[in-house]
View 1 (cartoon, rainbow, N blue to C red):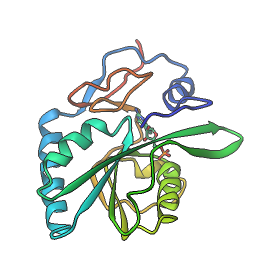
View 2 (view 1 turned 30 degrees about the vertical axis):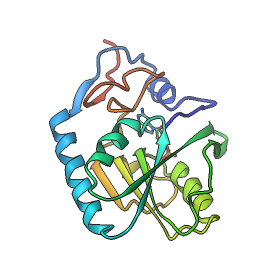
View 3 (view 1 turned 135 degrees about the horizontal axis):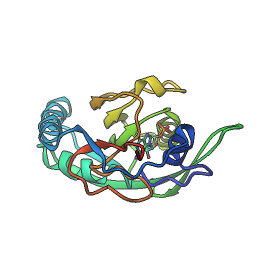
Length: 194
Ligand code: 5GP
């Protein structure tokens, strides 16, 4: 997801550790495992939505790489839609999430599957689901590549996930640090500089 933070998430991680994260990312989930898991998710979704038309709703920009692979692993008629959110975090205030791009005319009476890169505190998904429900879709479900359940601040229902990961700042396969690393084919962890 493209996010605009009063304090960028990665920067907050770095500040917390008072270290710079400049070493190359170390592999947390290799490319082959991601590809295998995406195929499994696609097969599961093809069964669960058999006979239905599904709207794949990608959250820009972080979910794009996962979205492209997942869509091709689903053997169903799909409609492609995207939206973009901005999140504002301030340590003194609850997280503020805003929709900054994306229409709503396709939502009514459709099965919507939100495709996310990672669920962390849950504020983003919570906002998005409440927003989508205003337009009376048939169903709204969530498929995220990564889930960090230990970081949750608000409860959200994650229907499908690729991998649960510990509380580390990850990059690659669409996820960035300062707009870098999105094109890594694996999920990596940024290590503090020595
Ligand atoms: P939350 O669930 O806290 O509202 O936010 C989820 C968003 O925070 C993700 O879509 C992503 O943009 C960002 N985020 C959370 N954890 C990480 C992480 O480990 N790495 C990266 N690159 N982004 C993260």
